[in-house]
Length: 322
Image (cartoon, rainbow, N blue to C red; front, side):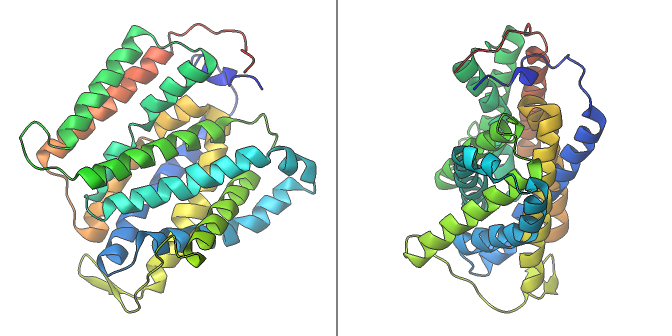
């Protein structure tokens, strides 16, 4: 297949940028709620496997009819795109979310997401290694600033003991997010965005369910009301919201945005998820980042902005066969 030439030059004007930006912000708003909805469930005794399996399964059930309708009987497209669908379900859906929920078990929601959102820099690295799109000096500087911000978020300079396990889970989630941005922007398969979202959610849900049935993934849930910032809610409500808002709506709008914007620009706009996550963490679980985390997050954002501005200077190249 060919490289994603839409990512080679962000200065190229393409239709759909306005709707694409709106969809990307809607996706960021929806995704940003996931950690704050999940954290009280985890604190109540739910396992990360149970939370993510229910979230993805509910999302799959809601999106599947829309995905089938969008496919319009063109089953050959789905068969040809099967490797992409499997990778998407494995890494972008099941892997990314399981790792993120595992991270927020021991880390603040915002801090875990700040670590995960080093993913845009990883997208640039992937486009360089896989497609020969060499980053410029400003891009390299931006990556270095983001790395510095990551160290500040993790509070390594103060000598404090940081959460190594949670950090490793968050970094693993960043890899899954990188796969999400790259595969979501790849329209070479011809799959409609909603079909890719539905198929990926189904693959991810089936995979997690099988691992649970085999005893390889703990699936532990607790009945009763769940406390959200002093308000007791029936347990079914956050579970349904996880599936409807943070899976069905988030993945559907996210893929549609990436098709219009490309993986680099979509991953840049998706940084708004950090801001939304800080807001939801404050509203739903009463978590407010400390000053060092906010400073580190600002450095990560600044670094990613520099990465994106650096990518604007890349000359448009002919597609490279890979």
